[in-house]
Length: 441
Image (tube, rainbow, N blue to C red; front, side, top):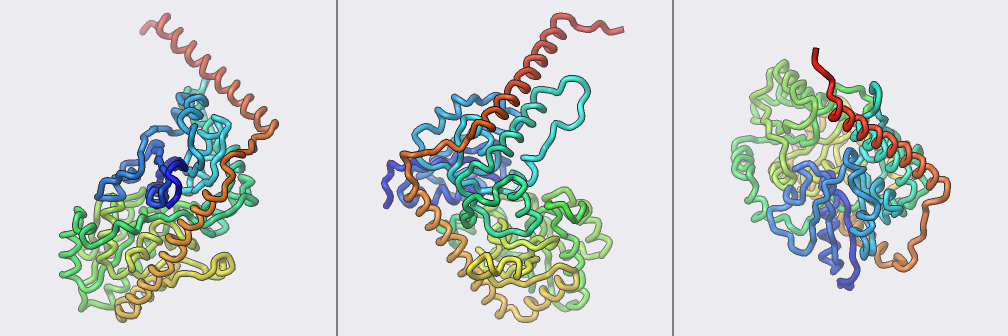
């Protein structure tokens, strides 16, 4: 076991990304604290386990881009003093730069590299509001902070995402495998039986021959170049073809009421007259989602562009369920020791073909799901945890070099002065309005 004196700070938990690695490191004897930024309810630690976790301290900060000004550099430094290793996601780099600190490992969730750093104040008349200019300052800090992190924890991705590492001058930063998305030690039959969905999915399993699930967001009416484009409609059309060609079997498609295009998907389902074959579940916690996945025959991911990995991929293969997605293998084969087995589809007809294969030979594809699981445990869990443990063990804890050069100090000083001036003018404006209220006519 590692010396318990070594303290690790994990900052942020978007996509339930940091809670699993915090638990793995705590199991190894590190003293781990998970600092929550402003998290959605389905990204809280309680969304990822039915059990009480006692070996990870959890502190809720509530930080986000609009209240950036409320947290001082002194507060940040004091909060993280005494910690030896920093792993962060989401807005963690921006807050650390405010305190003139840098992360040891940055674990991007997606929007924190392709969206946050490039936001603007937008259009406004007169003086921008405090929250708007503070949000803008936070995004500028994020853009400047990202090239300073020691390592980026990220699996190979498509060019549409990888290009942002170049735009942010992060392409030369040390790249390590993605941290583990799931805490695999907790899953057991007893664990799944605690789920709110357990009895419902068990009944569905008993009453149907074939269950298909897609639990990623419904997002497919946007432009196809948008990184949020998931092409959910291709699954609906492919599933419809399966129903047309297998009228004697009972098949169900499980979807979540999650995403901006839920109503568009429901409309498409109604137009195809297959609503009786589709079961909608509410936007759900991961601990419940995995219970649904576990009882399905096949899981479908994003079909809009080629991806190697993301949360939904790993959640499916972690449950030993065969995965259908869009992956151009030659994009990734040279970047990873081996690829997990899956079924590839990027058109409705290919979705139908993949679903038919699993439908007609369930034993063969059950083995594929188990093989994918073995790959997942080897690389995405055990290998990833070992890698980060090695990073922590080999860091020189007494020599933290300052990467913030003089040009960046000038940039920070300028933006702080500019934003500070706007804030003062806003406060003066508000005070003036209270002292001299305008008369109504």
